[in-house]
Amino acid sequence: MLYKFWQEALEYKETIIGIILGVILLSLFVILPLFFTANPYQTSLNIFSPPNSKSLLGTNDVGQDIFSRLIVGGQNSLRVALGVGIFSTFLAVGIGVWSALAGGLIDNLLMRMVDILLVIPNIIIIIIISAYVSPTILLEIIIISLFTWLVGARVVRAQVLSIKERTYVYAAALFGAGPFYLFLKHLLPELIPLMLTLLLQGMRRAVFIEAGLAFIGVVNPNVISWGSMISQSLNYYYLDVWKWWLLPTAGALSLSLISLTLIGYGLEEALISSSERGKTIAADS
Amino acid sequence: MKQREKLFTYVATLLFIIILNFLLPRLMPGDPFLAIYGEEAALTLSAETKQELIAQMSLDKPLWIQFGAYLHSLFRGDLGYSYALNAPVSSVIAGVLPWSALLVGSALILSTLLGFVLGVESGWRKGSRSEKLILFSIIGISGLPSFLIGVIFLLFFAAQLDWFPLGGALTPYSDFTGLTLLQDILKHLFLPAMALSLTQLSEILLLTRASMLTNLSSPYVHTAAAKGLKPLGIRYRHAGRNSLLPVSARLGVSVGSALAGSLFIEIVFAYPGMGDLLHQALLNRDYPLLQGIFLTIAVTIILANFLADKIAWRIDPRMREE
Image (cartoon, rainbow over the protein chains, first blue to last red):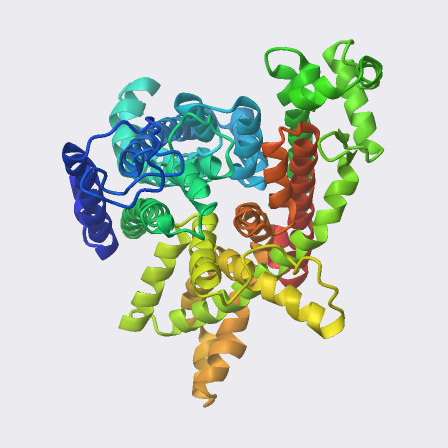
């Protein structure tokens, strides 16, 4: 199932370009730090130094090594991305499946809650909460996840409702399969392609939101982030430093986002086309 | 969704936002008074003023009485007092609203027009090389945060090329009037509005394109073609016009996401709207102002959604049944 879905996703050029871009970025982030090591927190008197053999991207306004901050910022981005991707997918699947299987009042209540939480763009709610708690990475993951599972849960619910009606699920239930067995054996495997798509889209959204929160300065100031690096470097637009401070950071952020967007897009297209095929098969039989 | 269900959703959303706004400072560890007013402001207040404010918000009483007092002051239009700016929050916000409305409004118009034309053309040329290229690049750009596009615009078109001013909404200390004033406003508006509309473009483009693809295969388009109408007319007057329906149905959502994006764009360009004010409130730890801004944004979005639904129902009666 997963293999077939993967094959299908790879038929889209977007997926392949996204994956290549992601692999290049990741390997740069693994290989380059081997040659350029510096403490990203260490300040020095050597401020606004241009790139040289010791520090690949020079230093910032308080003499910190920009390249090592870029790397740590990327690692933090990746942490938030993975954390939010996994946690929000988990929430989406949990609540989507629960809603679909429970039906009735619970289904109604849960979906109403999703409608309500979707009216105001999640970034606005996340900003106001972060302004009060000034989150570090773990808290940031939790706050972002709590407001990014909503659309996923709707899709999961719809998918479960359609799987539930299939003949083989009825047959299994008829042979005495319990709800837990049905979920594990018949529902979950069918949901895996969707979960993978939700994971990638959740990761993209997390990188996007994390950078935005750091940019306006509501996350804990000790957390190194691409967003805060961009906002700090913007204060010195009149100096030449933007070339090795702002530009590489903006580039790293854009390329990561583009990579995740493209992979997410490819997966979604593959998902849509396979579900459409499922529909035509169901209509034929 | 039926009209009544929609209305319920909006009322519940408003209630959720009010409760969130009420609970956030009160759930923070430590003295709620400090969390409500921000530590710096709270320290500068005299003991008497402090007692007066505590009594006014019923902070010495149980939570549900506090909530009553909170609702009571909200309904009187009292959003609190900003000690950092030394002015009532409501009047501070009212002062920046026109600029936000100008920025978000012009970005929405730009992105809708451009997204619609690109969507119609892209649906018409589906599968061609140029169409794929445009679609591909717009999907890529749409994945970027609004502030990033703003920063890049600012850096190149304002800082390097010097074509546009670096920030603000007006040239400071100038007393332009009439046409020169208008020109000055437009000059300052151009980059932020372009950056914001670029982030909103893809959604409208993809919606128009998808509905264009269905419309192009419908019988009335074939009839129009059989009558010998010009392709341009078929494209815009027949298929294109109907492709506007899903765009109008999503208008409320578009307003919300444009408003969210504008918060970041305004910070980049120091454009004196809600986003810039939010930034100041964050820097000053001015919590009453922060809460007022949050509430105003939420109410604006809910109202925009409500109005957009009304418009969509007017345009397309089928929407009422769904």
